[in-house]
Image 1 (tube, one colour):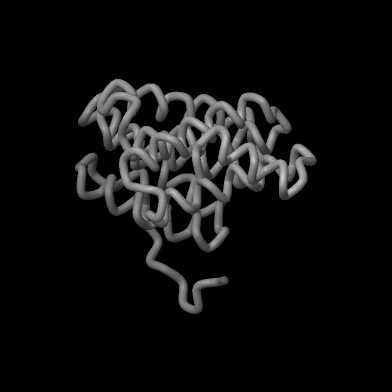
Image 2 (cartoon, rainbow, N blue to C red; image 1 turned 90 degrees about the horizontal axis):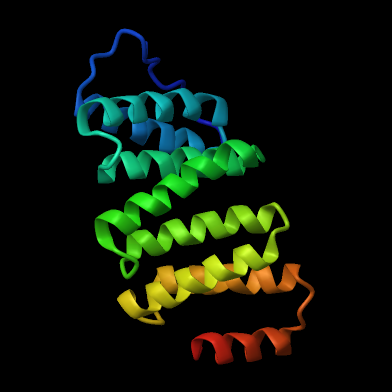
Length: 178
């Protein structure tokens, strides 16, 4: 989908370093990212992350969100080598901030797992996607929409690995009880 009218242009070099500017850049970047307008999303995400790092430091939740957004953007573009360090940083920060048993940590595991799947690294992907799914079910329950998305990601991985539908259901039941 394309935006019918152009969005206002932001001169990223002249904008002040303020958290509201970072959040606005991040939100506008997310809009462009969702629309597949990656060339517009990237500088906005980069600017937001630069502000987060400068004002909040590299160990802050907002910075982790910025890393996650950049990593996901690069993954969506097929720039896997650029995506990996950002997604790994997001995992590390979420584990540090929340521990392993938190929905945001689960989301980071999922995103890194999806990257590994896109790279054909199925065993690494499976470890992370299983960890994400078990974590999110523990936190939010099996019927929560996020749990269902993570379950579908596992199913897609198993199909990519050549497993039959029956084998997938057995594996999910054995691994996750679902």
